Figure 1 (cartoon, rainbow, N blue to C red):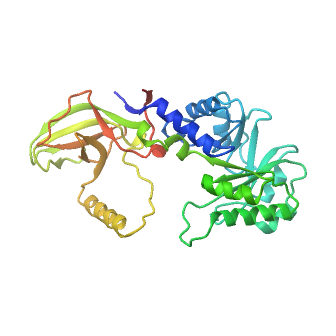
Figure 2 (figure 1 turned 45 degrees about the horizontal axis):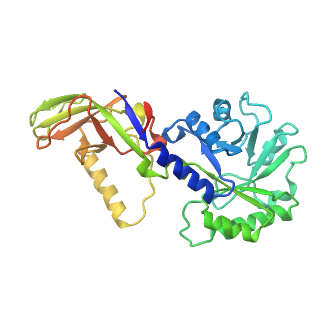
Length: 343
């Protein structure tokens, strides 16, 4: 009895191949929870695609997938001087560096990608620091530019990248390879026209593994079905049932990431209004769940438990049987599935 992600493997892999053809030099990303699949599975998929480089989030993740991917491993989190040592496969790991003191601290010959500060303002070497970078003792394999997703000011991401690549070249540093995040294939072609001597390599995770939405479906197993009458109390907090119906116990709880939600940036009046409505309902202990049965989204009967959720099914709906599966709409980057099943 598990929380399951079903995968239409042929369709999923066809999407990967299409994206690989669209983005020249694409670098797959496998990090965090592995987008719901697990990093080991994604590392094996990247190996099947035949790409030479796989990007991971941390040095620990690089060590964990080294046996699943035979090529180079690009660690995206910038190296920090004094960070705990991790045993990594010799010669196969490329460290991202975003601070001059970290460059100085790395041993001679270390393979590095230098991240530059962009309009993201997250981390990176400033343009003014480029001419003085202490990199003579290192193997600089390129520069990285992490770009914002939205541009409400209407600015052109190609112009931003163009300025930074020119600044790198003017500082006497190599512009042969530049790693990009959040740039379209069309914009990549525009950049290639401006800088024909530079290989622009897009690092892509979400769109590669989760972009073919119809290839993926999530299901939760029904573990118990209990009839309740209006006003009857139930659960840890002994709430009253709002009407006649059934309590469904389904797989998926806080340990899976169910019911845990990351903050969202809302655009426009309607999304904000919906957010306010949800907040208002939550104050009276009414929270919609990500579970559905017979096309109807169900309410949480109470907050999710660690490994299961209790849902309220209105009396007008025929209840599922124990062992049936409920449809589940979850964010893959925050969900830990018990199993991934290929179809």
